[in-house]
Image (tube, rainbow, N blue to C red; front, top):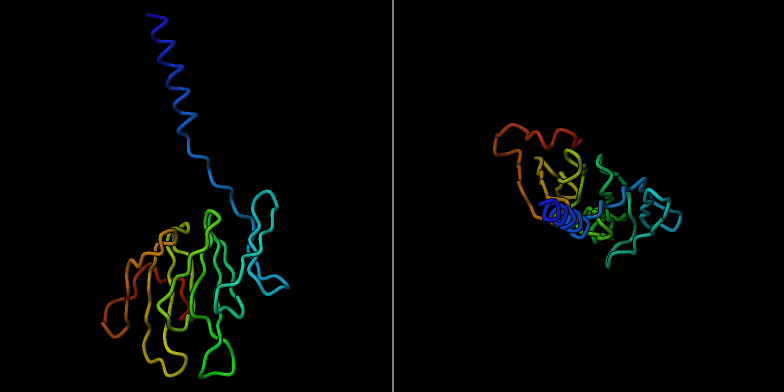
Length: 165
């Protein structure tokens, strides 16, 4: 009986080691470097410059998620109708991968929701926007979860409370 119990315990211990998911390294900081690129620094101090996206001319507004597992920033690109670049997407960096979120319109504001598993953004036209258009995305998959438009007459969703525009 003792041999069977010991064998069982050893098997379970070995299985737990084999199938354990290593916890992702927490991020310590995200910033825009003097090279104009977004940089992510992990808990061990390793600084990684994130390569430019295809049409990217600049990045801005870096933010670190409260759970420190994701970081994000705005991707700015040239615009035909302005003399300055505009933010058209949010780059989210999680588990050494970068995913772009957005609907193609100008991004007015963005934020992580909750601990960082979701991202909310306010988007619209460059000039003449008369109502708010808000979107909620899953930060890891990039899936669009919810859309809210001011003209629908509904109350502002709770996930949008930290958006300024």
